[in-house]
Image: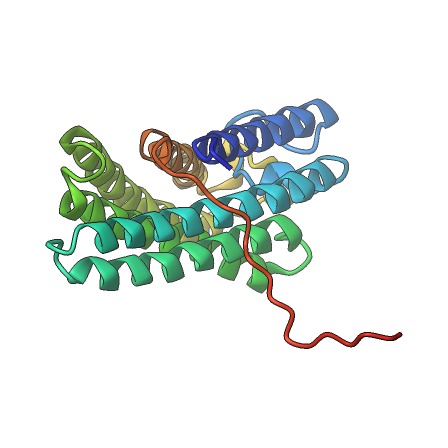
Length: 246
């Protein structure tokens, strides 16, 4: 498989289509107000919840494959360049774990709606954004460490900048989200109006979520140039025992 660089492109496209598509359907169905709902609020009711869940599952699998390919990519660089700092291997393993936990969180968010299984949904959101942000920090550090063998200095700076933005936005999302729900006195959080209380905190929190989700997609897309130098072979399968009947 030589066109591995299409993996991050596919992840970018599927998440953007998922977020915007479910938002448009939810607004047209009258399930949310158009004024910046949470991404998951726009995917609470059917049919948009079905579309959201299916596409998120596909996206999380593709994202997991992308994260694993990046992990093996860094391993190969270390094997071919023994002068690299051994700390690269440690950071690479940590990044793999953080990335996979983020994928699991994305799947939880897509399959456990806030209105049905609130605790699991929030755990999934924390894993998605929290572990995802830690993954970005690890990748930004790795990018600096493997330069100039792979990547560019500009790419490292951009990844560092996106990591800082995601950290700030994650804190804003969490703090203002809690404050807005404490102050909310309306009937339906999916249809949050200015008169319902906590409106400004809700807007800040939901905008933070949309921005951080967009940055997530662009961060993964930034792997595209480096993946142009990567080729993946089919996995080898060995038979442990063969029974022949004559």
